[in-house]
Length: 295
Length: 251
Image 1 (cartoon, rainbow over the protein chains, first blue to last red):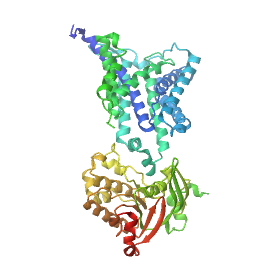
Image 2: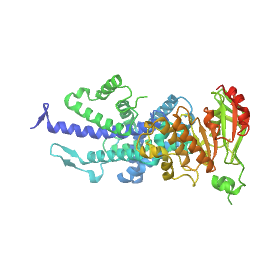
Image 3: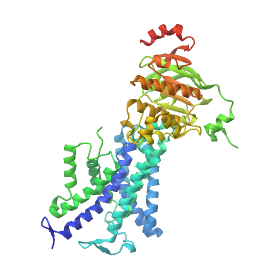
Image 4: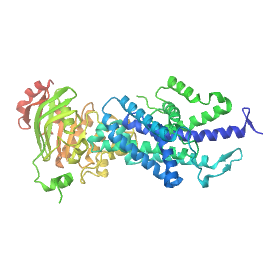
């Protein structure tokens, strides 16, 4: 059997692939956080709850409305994104002129309320979302057996990341967003409706989280607390990558997934902490993050 | 039936007699938080005129332009743009009355390339300059259209900041210190651009420190001090008032 540093190749490659799948979630979520932070300057602590809402909406939609996986993948981000827009319009906008710390507190409070409400109704044990029929089974990659659904998650998450990159870096609306991130007052003086741009941006970031939530539903137990545990890691990923670039967020997300996967192979005890160790290193050596722009 | 609110600014223009005063500012007070910056500014600018706002640093000239764009904290008084009261308007509606604003710090976006910077401000009227015309007027910008906006030289950035609002079809230009810190050859080029814009019938408000640059271009000068207009000097009166003006401006 082929060995890599004393570990069978299949185990090694397997953990890299699983790490990539986790990394795809980190990338999707940190991307949304970065987009929101760029324009609104608030750290969206409700991001994990919004991801969880995505998974729950898919689950409840299937149980009570018969909305299948594909429809959920399309509808849930729209619905949860619209909910995000309402939050921005009627709550976040009211405190936009205050210290951004209040935005953090507000979104943190919202996350607690959302989680608490769902815990009240559904408990914390979590439910299973059935894997869609087409993704039953797996792919034999030669070195490992990869569940088809995980392969799909990787493809879908990466496609969504690239779509986001394209929207922000290559379209006119994206140019508004980038420019608004730099100097929103001047954008108003050019006739751009910045409050509307802010609402749409927040909605888009929330929709990204919800999309990740739907993708995650067949993979992890759908429970009200599924977002908060993930979000802490995603914050670390954002700190490592820095707030400067979209591609940076994607690359950092994926590589942190891989690093986590490899740690599971070589030193499993550290696999839950390795990302935070990287974060400490990055903060010591390059405080703006790997892809962040020097202020 | 259409009410006035449902008409676009262009349609509004068509429905009312062309106002000779493109801009009329009356008793304008402006505040940043607790500080009271403008203390009753009064002036007007007629269609096709180029007027300057002169004054020492801190006299309120830039704040006057910002107040017109609704970029300061609180304002009272009246600002009429082409016959429309703008004091109660949202900031992003004001440019759509046909105003182009060029800020003192130029406001070139670092995350956009030159071409994106140029295309950024939404068009406010259909009769703006075309991209071809703009690139013909500023060939440097064409050559550097793929460069990051802030990689340009100061002069090129200023050209870009001007070109950007010409494309939108704005008919009133508010230009804040456009010659500041630029080489004489660039300043001369900007002078040519302003002459050309005047010939095209643009209405221009120029906040300027460089009086020698502004004097031959302007129809009238307003002198500001302590947040008020303290003097109005027409181009014809200028030769006789020059020394007086120099002493007022401290040059």
